[in-house]
Image: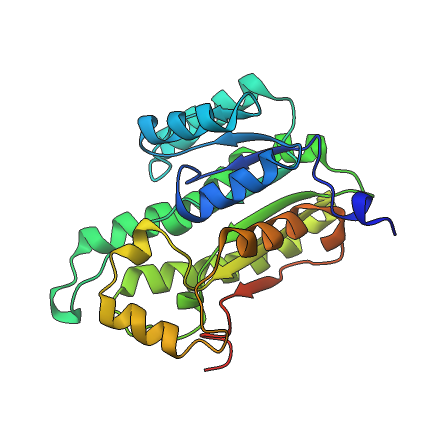
Length: 256
């Protein structure tokens, strides 16, 4: 029952997709600062390489556009080349697209579904052997999918494919959890609310301000808030969670 044992991630090998900024960066920093080796992926090579240089030798940048199956394969091979196992996989890479219902384009549907939902399944599938190599009955390997409160409530923004994809991520999490638990791999999800990111910076001020006013905790999420949830889910402390979604939103959607 020692807290240092229950919550430790020291020595673990962690993959964080979409890891160069926003929530991905928060997670990557938390793990590096607590003794893990982190493999970072991002579509823009310059961004992920800059963050890895800042984080030091424990961070390994592997740029990839995970919306494409060929890139998922290339990325997985690159991961295999640097590690024999993966203890924790964070499926965080994502994007959004907003447009009025009558104008919403097919590209805005397919692009978002490919990166937000399809890549979660197929990257997990491709890295399953590395996860199994790390997994034991006493300390399961972990897959942690980053969903969104927009997959749990009705957003005021017309981001149809984003909301649908994130709802899909949360149910996919439950499906994967049921079928991978016998292989000593836990699958859970985080549904973030408003955290500072490029995505939230692109939302109209009026909507952001209204969200803040209606959040019971009266603030946006911080890096420490995300780090706490991410470290918990990647450690032994979350050992009996299976298919769970941890909603970190200050009460914005959970109490609406």
